[in-house]
Amino acid sequence: MSLPVVLRPEARFEFDEAFDWYEQQRPGLGVEFVEHVQEVLDWLSARPELYAQVFQDIRRAVVRRFPYSVFSKVEPQQVVVSAVFHSRRDPKIWQART
Image 1: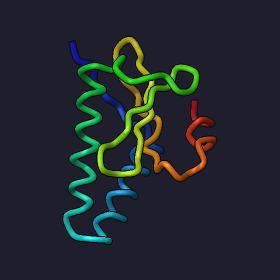
Image 2: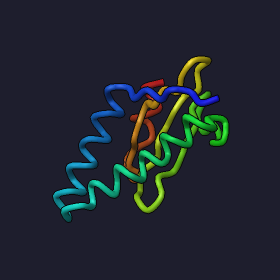
Image 3: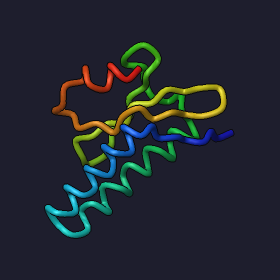
Image 4: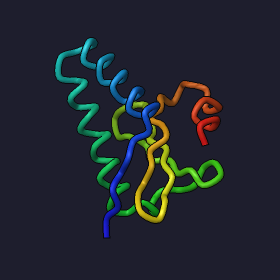
């Protein structure tokens, strides 16, 4: 059974901002970023318990090939993504969202 994945507004903003930045670096790179993040979101939907809890009940999934992680919380009816976060940023930023 798969669960719907919902991105919080902050996570959607980070995702869109990263796409724009990568696309400016090289046309098509933003699309590759989206594909890799979508791969993580698909796994979160299919097997949300696969990823380790890293802070309270928040799980971390690393995005392949890019220095980003997806932080999510598994709820009974959905998976809520609280951050699509660059690995060099201060983790206290996404932790404050929980």
